[in-house]
Image (cartoon, rainbow, N blue to C red; front, top):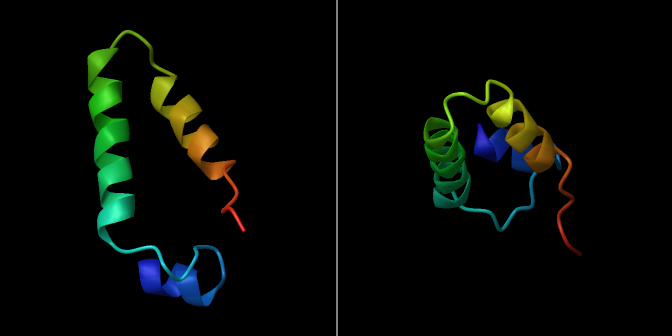
Length: 55
């Protein structure tokens, strides 16, 4: 999946598998810390989607 995203230009070529896995793990952990906030994961994922790779 990462390789396809890199080939499509959606993800920089220097990103390694560990980076996205760590990010997903961190977002899941944060979501568990605030179970009463049902939209927290949506907001965090929207934040990540809105990030642009730096030049």
